[in-house]
Amino acid sequence: MQVSTSLNVFNNSFSRMEALRRCAAAGFQALDMNYWDLQEQMLEIGWSEEETWAKEIRAYADQLGVRFTQMHGPVHGGAFKNLVPGLTLDSFIGLAERSLRTAAILGIPWVVFHPTDIAKDGVETYHQILEFNVSFYRRLIPVLEETGVGIALENGCYYPGFNRCFTIAEELIQLVDALGHRLIGACWDTGHANVQMIDQANAFRMLRSRLKALHIHDNDGTKDLHLLPYQGTIDWARLVGALKEIQYSGDFTYEAHNGVNKLPDGIRDAGLKFALELGKYVIADND
Image (cartoon, rainbow, N blue to C red; front, side, top):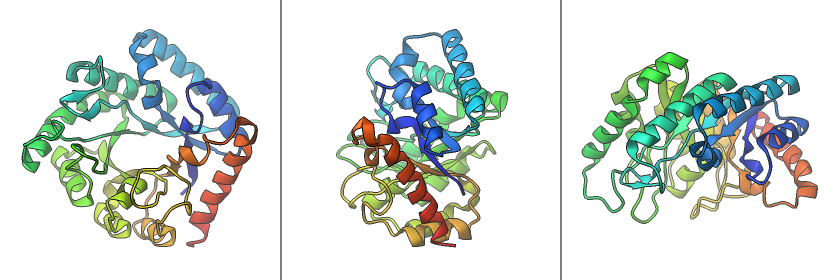
């Protein structure tokens, strides 16, 4: 495992070029492109502009000697009937397809998406929600096969009215297996699981080869805080031990932006270097 970070350690007041340069300068050799942060911008431009932008980002990453190994894809909303303003299900599919083509340009193998409820405070059964998600994400299979880029479906955490389903490994496995495609796997978010009080080591043992990506962050067990390891209550030794046990082959990818992006900009680069060394320690301390 290598330590990587989402570029969301820099908010949108910084260009992605600057975020890329500074993460590389801190020592990160693998990065996650957070398309979600760019979603509003991408909705305002066409594919031609996005393609040009992606090629420029890829060229700069190659120049710096870093690779993009993961992407957080666009987000439809809290539920399929509670969409981000301006989106429809069809326009979201179009945006998702664009994100996959951008991922292909950047050399990214896995793009993370959120499976969700059908509606906030919905009355649908789990099996109805499962079938809805299966039907919805099947629509992306032609682009997956065209680009060779896969999608990793992420465990959520419940908050009032939302995410009644797919917070536990068993349900994520049912979804991935029902889709039944080599380019569809799972992403495990450690912070979400900690809020749900899930035995994460056991979850990894259930997911096994389905596990393609991680969102690594910590919290106090009550809120989704997106902190660095050891700033919360997760048992990192047990978690990493299970990842090694199942021979997880992906990256140890930070989504721990609140551990870094709250820092004054003058100290943020030092914070990035610390985050990288901390991640290496988390992995090595469990060898």
